[in-house]
Amino acid sequence: MAFTVFPKKGLEPFAIKIERFEVSGNDFILFDSGNSPSKEAFLSFDDVAAILPKGKQPATEGLMPFDV
Image 1 (cartoon, rainbow, N blue to C red):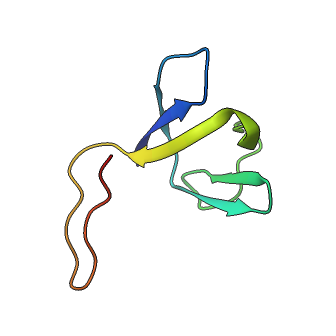
Image 2 (cartoon, rainbow, N blue to C red):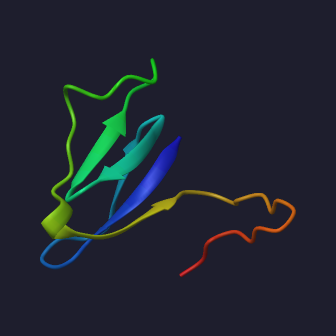
């Protein structure tokens, strides 16, 4: 799945392709296509303002797509 990462300052938004991510304390855990924590990619929690899925998000009963 593709996500757009919005840095807090200094850089333009950029795209990453990962299976999913989780927040654990002050860390992002990025998961690869095998649904295992990635050993090759990381994001600095202190430098990221937002991570949003790219493309249209389907609405689910009781939930609305996230939009900025």
